[in-house]
Length: 206
Image (cartoon, rainbow, N blue to C red; front, side):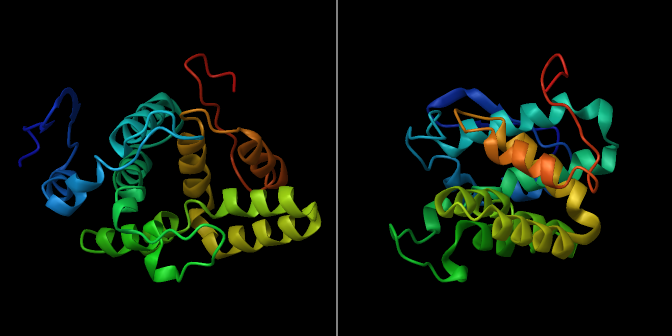
């Protein structure tokens, strides 16, 4: 598939994905990536169901913050979006049990993405894209917000210069479906001195 072509999906002709560059065209041509688009059913946090629909929401959100980011950041955010959830179909899920890292969908996404980039910061954001939410959820469940904040600061330190990129993607990913916005607001409050706040809404007030 070239960048002048569109990925047309069987039975979903109204939903199309347009590659913005050669890298996107290359990854979109991979059958294992395409398979991931069809995974998922409507559920809490993802009433849209399939990964494809969630992906389109995230890409739309990225387009809404174009005025606040440069082209390089835009391309990196799109790359993260295109792979971040596409390997849920291959991941291992055990309710209430710890899953080995190599079976997490985010780790599988990182492995796939590494075929197209050696940018370690970009790969880290892909692998850790759900970590802030998990830290918030653990804090909410335990009530130990001090420990949650320590874990969040440790994540921020591990991200290094990629913290702003992580934040932007976390925002674009969280402002989808019927996800609670509490994790995002907590993240922004805790790290307000380390990130550059970017509003995300059609009227740019949130």
